Amino acid sequence: MPVGGDGPLTGASPGSSPYSPFSQDPDSSYNEDPDQFINIPAGISQIGEGDHKHVVKVNSFEIGKYPVTNRNYQRFLIQSGHKSPPYWKNDLPDSLNDHPVVDISWFDALAYCNWLSGISNHKYRLPTDVEWERSSRGEQNFIYPWGNSFSAENCNCWEIGVGWTTPVNCFSKGASKYGVLDMVGNVWEWCSSLYIEYPYQVDDGREDLTASGWRVLRGGSWMDHEWGVRAARRLSGNPESISHNTGFRVVRESYL
Image (cartoon, rainbow, N blue to C red; front, side, top):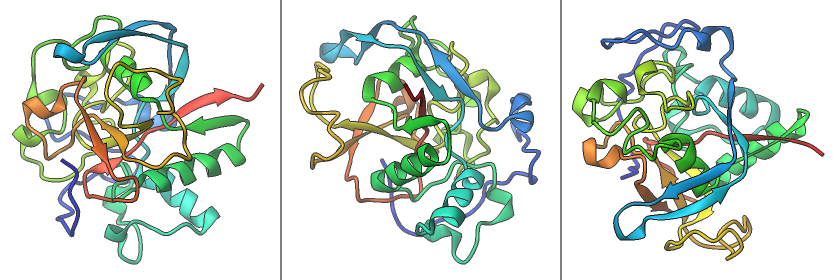
């Protein structure tokens, strides 16, 4: 579960050329373009598991290939004057440039999306609960992004024992079938949706950004074991809370 408080900064990445300390090559395309988006086609997706399993029609969208990094978030802070995450102390440690930003509340994530929309030709927002799950499980409805068998080498989970975040391109073999990385492990990710019981209904108020209530978190983190990084797992989070294992990624839309 998301946690708060001070923690060790044990992850590392050598500046602009992150590497994987594990048994697979990193996604080298990150070095050429760290701001990639993946098109997720429209279709029918299975959402949830067990008694909560159901199908939902999902429109096409583009989602960030990686979670938002400290490097990208720093640009936002410089240009907007928004408050920096507590673990940065006075400044962002260079070793964490390519790690996902953490200590981010749901409202911080919204502020980032609004800022990014304002300086670009696109609209940026948080993924909905079902968009996130479709990006992770694919049309095959896998248990994990890469398939139905757990492999600790495919994500930053408790079993590999890093004890902090890792660069967002480390686990190339852990990509979903659409090619999205870090969908499980590393950090919990905020979704736009209110945490309301299934079945998912887009018109039941759960996508009202002004409504009060706890919001959906997805993906598990470096603190979660095999069971905790299932692609269908969802958690509720206080939108005002922050923790050392919670960040976010964004969806991109074209302005009409």
